[in-house]
Image 1 (cartoon, rainbow, N blue to C red):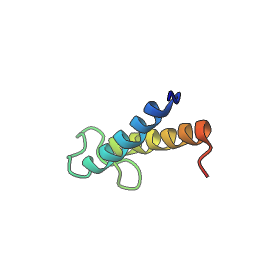
Image 2: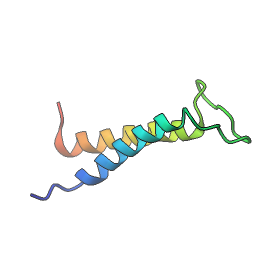
Image 3: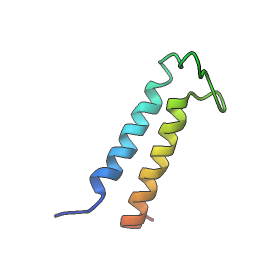
Image 4: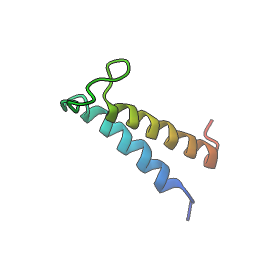
Length: 64
């Protein structure tokens, strides 16, 4: 059964979740530091990718 977009949306969701968690243990880049609500640039990008993955999955499969 082929489901278009499933692999892409799952990748974005899981990769961004694990990247967000790992960023807590990393030291932020010296030139950037913590940016917004004490989050690093990697965490902010991970949140963006996570939201994008959820949006794609909801758009394609109308999860309720």
